[in-house]
Length: 142
Ligand code: HEC
Picture 1 (tube, rainbow, N blue to C red):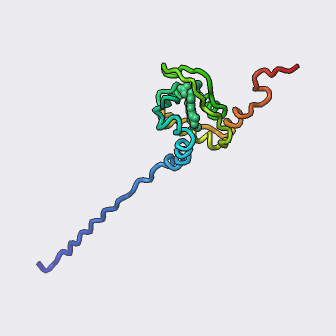
Picture 2 (picture 1 turned 45 degrees about the vertical axis):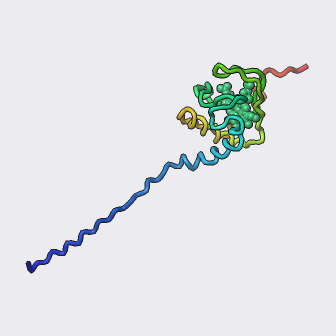
Picture 3 (picture 1 turned 90 degrees about the vertical axis):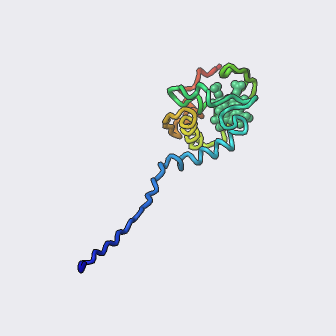
């Protein structure tokens, strides 16, 4: 064999790490917000004796995110029957959250609890926070 075969197979195993969709990053802020502002009462979404189960909430079936935006901004109190359980607690209003924060957490919660892609603009939150005069419920003027 005067023709030495220089077989030097080089096996290159290139591990290509898949680029994880930016969704994870986008939602990281919302995750922190959820654990800091909502989880104290709602825990991971499974609820507590004093706050309803969010996983089973009817909110995720809504066409629009308005009901969720509204409850975050203005809270809710009084007796409510939610998923067959009576609640007479107080969800405090959280107007100190910015429009951006509420938009992000709203998108995140639709994704988390219903695997739904809901796009929410901060302007949509602003409109619910402060409706245009024409959109406000009939004001009582003397
Ligand atoms: C201090 C406790 C508390 C905190 C903090 C809180 N909630 Fe609540 N939440 C409640 C209570 C109590 C109710 C039920 C109120 C009632 O009796 O109508 C409620 C109701 C809700 C509902 C309505 C569920 C349904 O199916 O009707 C949603 C949605 C909700 N909360 C989301 C949130 C989100 C999102 C946050 C964080 C931004 C949050 N809550 C923070 C206590 C809390």
